[in-house]
Length: 162
Image (cartoon, rainbow, N blue to C red; front, side, top):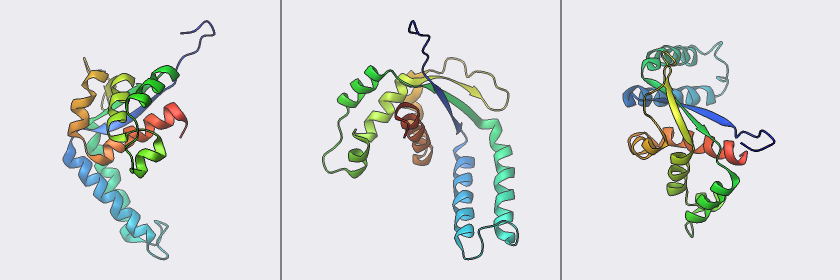
């Protein structure tokens, strides 16, 4: 911490470790979005299918709580962020890399390994003993792309404001 008392911001991402429930949740979310996209179906009132899907999602989220962890990470210093960007240059011809200025596929995992400070269980708020950023590569290999993207987006929001 500096003489000015500066502390880096933190953020959390909820991660359901039951991949079956997570996949079911993702499918229901897509179905609800598709239902709401139908003409005159944006509201739950008057759309019994959208209402049913929303209720199913809410019930599923209650079941997911038992296998959900809340992963906390802290913004990196400007110097460390710059070092990681230099170490993971954007791939030539990759539009996503070009928009972020880094090789997304390697940068995010390297940055999260440095940024993650721990995790707690959503069900009881107790810490997940021994979980640190060093555990991130193993987690990243096991989660879905949609879950990984939640971490990636939050990492960039926390560190770059985007």
